[in-house]
Image (cartoon, rainbow, N blue to C red; front, top):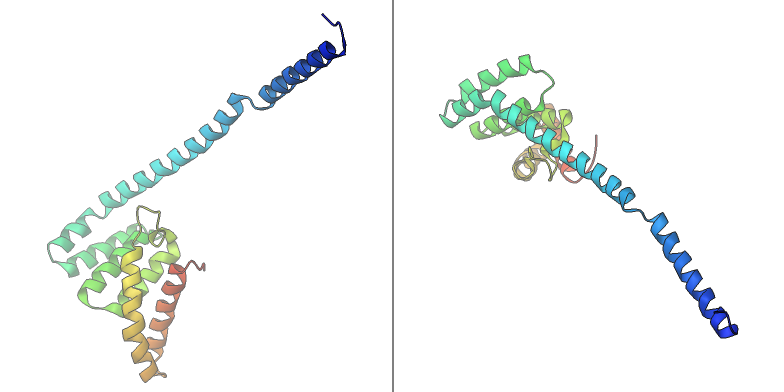
Length: 181
């Protein structure tokens, strides 16, 4: 079997190859990778389920407001929103809905202020990946606010309410650009 140097060299290379294969298989066990990918999959699944549960809960809680809004009773919708805001004071969704309703009513400065309150409570409303995202609506509102409120603020630099409205517009603009608090 080990007759000459040539045979011994082949057997040595074969033994090294088998050892390398065993070492590679030993360090790369399939259970380790599956555990990591399974854990990340579970986290992603949990996050998705939590998002869906939150959206469902918000739809259920704010259904009366949406029905009043669709019926055209914007004042009634605002009144119902105030009730819900007292019941759930830390919930950002009431501020976002209030901003939408105020925008429908033509009260742009108040709508912007309401959006700011909501986004300060939860940045989900400007996150592109969030199921609650209102990014496009807020972006349009910021563009309109920069034009309208910006020109009025330049014309009346001593007006404190216009300066506050511009601060709110600038806050929303910075959050849309990726800035944080």
